[in-house]
Image: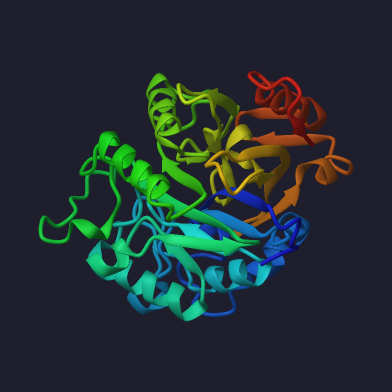
Length: 351
């Protein structure tokens, strides 16, 4: 884990979708020599600098043992897991619509690899016992619990005798999650609950009514932070004040972090950092402070080669972004994203 702050504060970093098309790492015929560290090196300053760093790992990493594959059914090299671990990621959410792309075999092999790497995971599990093991980090005397859910699995059915495999909203109602949240808080299992939600509509630049409805229910039940994935574009965050008088920070969609998706806003992602403070051990109250976004940009360098950069740095040397849809001024794109992300939080720090 990263830097330790005051003994009543936990610092968090979250990044978005790691969706590894074959063209990101050299093609599906490549067998060795995967170097994700090199592709990620420009964004190293964004990762591993807080107490906890989390990411959305949207492709299983069963590796070459079952054959690499790309859209529509993904399986990526195991080396991405080692790279994320080395870069400072502590937990990956694996509850997403691609988690069963290669069936139960692929999921179990991916989990096996994550365990070998020493990278904590949540949202999909190898057994009922594994599912019952809540992912709780104890930092500076504060207990931080993570939960992860997906709105679906691309129509791939979860085996009826193995419902533990994936936390899916198709099988688990929002009301059930609400009950779980309340139990975690009321039993003192955790001081802070952070939920990864794989929800929303792909490529929509603003959250749907359903996203906002789910977020409001989870906030009222005790979720302190909600980190959203799935739309593959950034969506503006907001504070939700609930009936209990507390506030939840909701990042509806973190966009793509590293992927092979082409399209202007599909290439823009971000890292989110914030502090969570527990002012008094006598009360459940926590205070979420200092949310800050750093924008990222994924560039297709050449055939079968993509790199990720801190957007602010990249645009200093690149006046234009060229896609199949047109030629765009880099500075205009950057400022458009900044302005959109401030829709509900005008003083949001974003760079």
